[in-house]
Image (tube, rainbow, N blue to C red; front, side):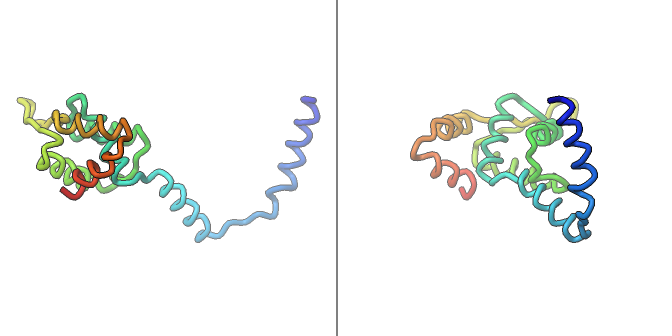
Length: 136
């Protein structure tokens, strides 16, 4: 069996992809499609951020955590993340604090924790909670 699989692999290398050519345009389309698969909806991003900030983090630490989760919404646009953090802070879902190290730390508030609990339960009001957070 092992030998047959090796022979199949060898024959495929010689025949299957020999006539296949990709244009630069096609390569770019494939790259964009792959990137779009890693983009999350606004609701998914907000939920992920609130979950990550259950423990205090700096903006930089949060950015690293977001990348580690595969969320690419803020890739090359980190300013948008800080705008979102500011918005969530204004609505009372996050709080921030400057530490002696001149770094700003973010943490979810009780209001944010309650909103997360509602979303996590997948209650009927979870959509309205997300709408309130986003549109406020």
